[in-house]
Amino acid sequence: MEPGSVENLCVVYRSRDFLVVNKHWDVRIDSKSWWETLTLQKQLRHRFPELADPDTCYGFRFCHQLDFSTSGALCVALNKAAAGSAYRCFKDRRVTKAYLALVRGHVQESRMTISYAIGKNSTEGRTHTMCIEGTQGCENPKPSLTELVVLEHGLYAGDPVSKVLLQPLTGRTHQLRVHCSALGHPIVGDQTYGQASNQEDQPFRMMLHAFYLRIPTCTECVEACTPDPFVPTLDACWSPHTLVQPLDELVQVLRAAPDPDPTEGGPRPCSPSTPLPGPGRPPPPPAKLPETEAQRASCLKWLSEWTLEPDN
Image 1: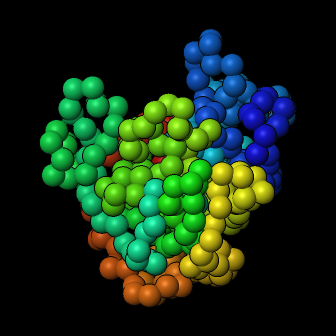
Image 2: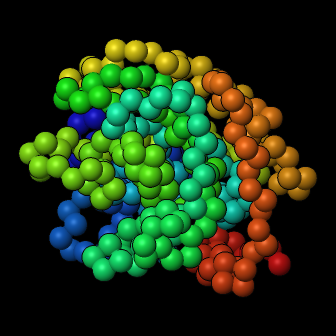
């Protein structure tokens, strides 16, 4: 990908109700700060001025979030009804997401499920970060699950690195970054959860990319697969030498996985009934906990701004 600019917004899916864009790394989704010269919101206004909604805070309804440093697929709803249908998919855990990453070291297990509970870090100077249960200062840790499949082993700027596919089965803040760091394989370029090193040794970006997204709304299935940015032709520092699992096979499994039935609690995407290729099977996903009053209040607040009236 070229350096981010207002003009080079990449759209990978478009319909009457939704856009999916391939967000650039080191670009914020939105900002009210005058000094934030480039945001996804500004890119969208430049490319699609006719689609901006003056009734919203930023002009566009972002269905989910991506970290500033993370690139890849991000869905934008173009009206309230579409935003409401996407929100319900996220709330009911019907969304399938998969990320590509380069992580430090050669991950020995070709496939694993990472299950460290994640909470907020209350340690002075680290309150903007998350941490795993058992870490000093970890507050309110919640169950968290990530599936990891190793794609390739190789070298990045001479250091051993693994290319992996990550599928979050829960949605905690910084989940993938925290889980990889907890394994001892932090994401290359992650200056928050990675290994401390000289600034001169840091790569040009954090190597985490939202690769695949499927949101099965009641009116259409929003599905997008973005280009793989971690290939030697795009980054000469990355030199793979051992193929462990072809990415194309995993994409086929992701596309073929059934969407769960929200009324019957059917199989979740890539659940044990439809596992990704690789040895072993992940443990069953955690039971869905009852919604708390605080969670419902948060949902209602979100719905009142972005969507149609919520169902009682």
